[in-house]
Amino acid sequence: MKDDLDTALAHLTAARNVVVLTGAGVSAESGIPTFREALTGLWARYRPEELASPEAFQENPQRVWDWYAWRRQLCLDVAPNAAHHAITALQDLVPELVLISQNVDGLHQRAGSANVLELHGSIHRIRCFACDRPGGDWPDPVGEVPVCRCGGLMRPTIVWFGELLPADVLAQAEQAALGADVMLSVGTSSLVYPAADLPYTAKRQGAFLIEVNPQPTPLSPIADVCLQGLAGTWLPRIVEALSARREA
Ligand code: OAD
Image (cartoon, rainbow, N blue to C red; front, side, top):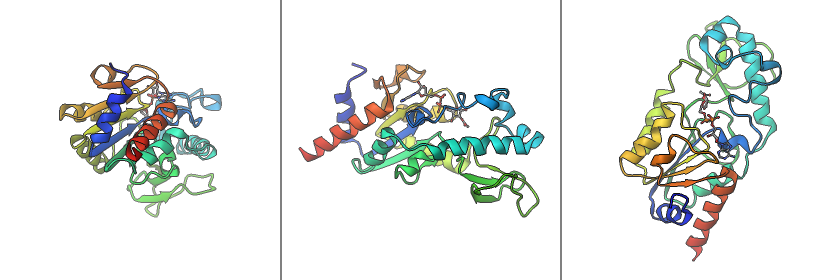
């Protein structure tokens, strides 16, 4: 049975290395619009490529900076939801947990998760567009695009269209997938590579694959268990059941 929670729990109980891969669906219940939903209101006139690409930044750095400042404020105005907190709690219920996220909103960290592998960067950190020098946290408040000491302009560390993922982070994520006993793929459409490759890498080496998503995705056919529904429903249920098994 694909929706068999008990089978999923048995594998999670027996697992040593658990890897969790999250996407925008984990933050949906916090009220963060998914990437494509964020193109609303005054930003509706732009296509994603006109706001989230190196070319867009070169053409109009202030417009791109303003869009991310607006999106970052959205992230700051909401709170982590039950799914984020459950993932943080899961870290204490399994021997080893590696959290890999495609999200840039920082909600996992605000829920208490440490060492999050942010495959697509973070809306809260900046770096120089010209020399790549890290610029630390997003400066508050600032209107103009900050200038690096090299004279270049600062940009969010978010991975833009046409850009490579941070190689060190991706290597750590691939290493985690190769050693996973269980992988949970939560709230991702499994459409964007190379992040979407990670569950396949885990499955190929024998990991037990659990998907949490209200909709089927291209990953669903190879998942061992598909928990159809919201992350904010299923993850607390998993954590509660694992905790009860530990106390029994
Ligand atoms: P998507 O917006 O592509 O997919 C969100 C997934 O979450 C969908 O499969 C939904 O069915 C599911 N979902 C929605 N609400 C949910 C909930 N409450 N609980 C569980 N699942 C839910 O987001 P991602 O898969 O994360 O890249 O997209 C991957 C990347 O595409 C993003 O990181 C972004 C974008 O290009 C960058 O920003 C670099």
